[in-house]
Length: 164
Image (tube, rainbow, N blue to C red; front, side, top):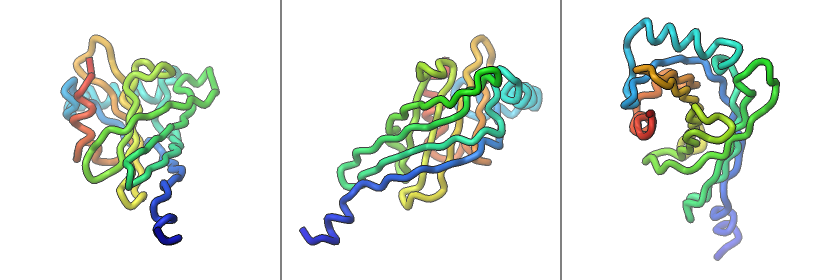
């Protein structure tokens, strides 16, 4: 193997920082909830001092070896509780969504009522992060995302996988 070939085989590592600026309500199936009152309730919920996600910056460190498909990622975000100014680190697992490198943590111990999702293009551009806040006993959950259209592509299926 040539020296150039060895360099190509190395994993790509990086850090992506994105701001969560969009709020959506989602049905338990992972599909968008179009009811204005549910979307308004979600916006209020994810802006409150004990569940503050809107406007935070999520920093994700990733490593992807495109040849072996061995990959890992961890997202760091401020605690959603304003009274606890601590940074949480959430280890993400690969999700296997075609056409992108996608990772997620479903009900991680640091945020047991949440999903944390991250994706980046196969060219390592267009990083996106989302946090799904699960609402026990309600018809909808709240999705806070850096992406304006999070329901396009494979994420919607993953969102509906375990929203119960």
